[in-house]
Length: 126
Image (cartoon, rainbow, N blue to C red):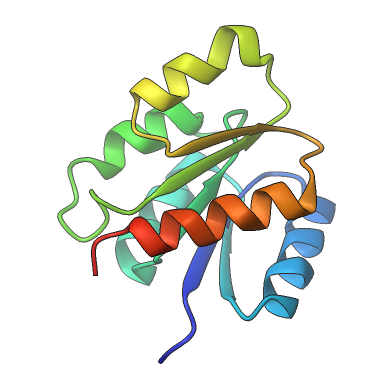
């Protein structure tokens, strides 16, 4: 079985590196984007199995990215986990309504995030 590919979208380079290391140690391949425009492009071209998405991004926030991805057949059903520093009171329900399968506020508990990733990948369409 091939490794699952995860697109990590965040404009914080330190977080990108840390998530890459955690996910690689857990057996996942990773690709990256640091803005909304590149995230949409990488999601369409890279065909990830799952997307970890920040909401606060330049060139289109996470909500814009989720909305744009619905237009692409190749990624329209890709599970999205939101990982953001934004206030969950104002963003969590909106993110879930936009299609996210899970919502985490930074800094997220590593075990809980990895469990959500595994669950999302296990429930994803092949």
